[in-house]
Image (tube, rainbow, N blue to C red):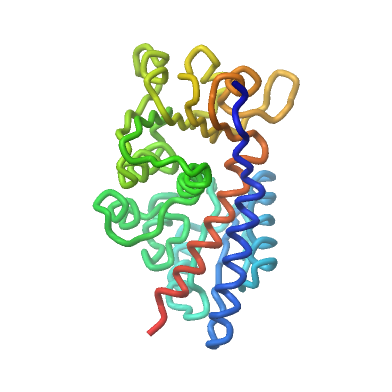
Length: 283
């Protein structure tokens, strides 16, 4: 068996086309969805990420504002800027790019963002809404994973899903989203004993630990769906995920590649969340 590829680029294009269509409909009513992105410092990776987000907004017809500040910006000044954006009716979503300089409390900054504009889905109110099944913004990367899973046409209800990783921005929300889809969910992590015993029972595996070859072919049940959230560099400097792609592809039923799988979905779901934030503000 050779797994079918889940093409994140193609699915992202479909979703972005829908965002553009819905954005045009809002503009016809005099509303342009607006996203503010704040970048503090000159982290090279962060600069690349925010550039992609601003470009994606422009391509979908959204209004975006990129605010860049020196790494010396005080926490108080950053919080004041967030509060000003909270009050700006032209801004429907606020994203503060992480990581922040060491002297700024990232948790305090995230919590300062109005929950109605928390399009990254990191606010405690967003996490609570997800846990209790209430309306809110889902964290972009796991939300994108759900869309990838849905694209396979496989019914998640009753399936056994194993999530490898328990981070606040991927692992935990991923497990909760799968629960909302009525999957039976197991969360594995660095203290899990015999990871292989768990993954061999899984119909769906989401690997999100940031370590190459965490999941190998002998750990996968034939026909399972494998979602690789990892973004690493191997010994040769080549981009790779958490999954041994070549080996697992010969066992799994469906698999995401790296790159071209989960990656394109993260920015796409940010656009979706920003659009929905604008739509929720309609009378």
